Length: 97
Image (cartoon, rainbow, N blue to C red; front, side):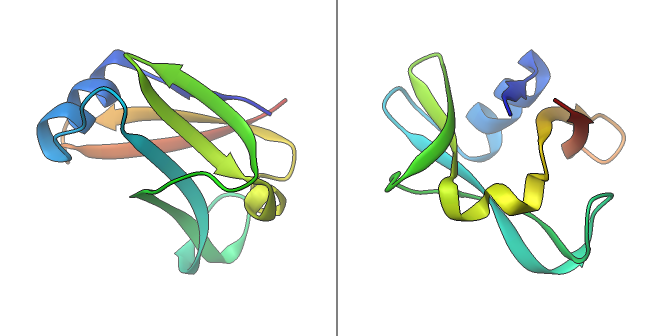
């Protein structure tokens, strides 16, 4: 399992979340909503500090990660984070690893 962040998504993180070098962003399973992988659960994202990360990627000295306890949500899929230009918000895609 891997995390991929597009350059457009990185721009969104800088503009909307005002991330800077040294910040840490966690992707996690959130109760509610829906995703292509699970009904009743969707992906959440927050600034956080890793405890037991299972997947990490560092871009521009910003750490993006998924905790071990949220691995089940991704069900062996890679996470692709991009920008939906019409909605001007992040868009997530999941591809079998």
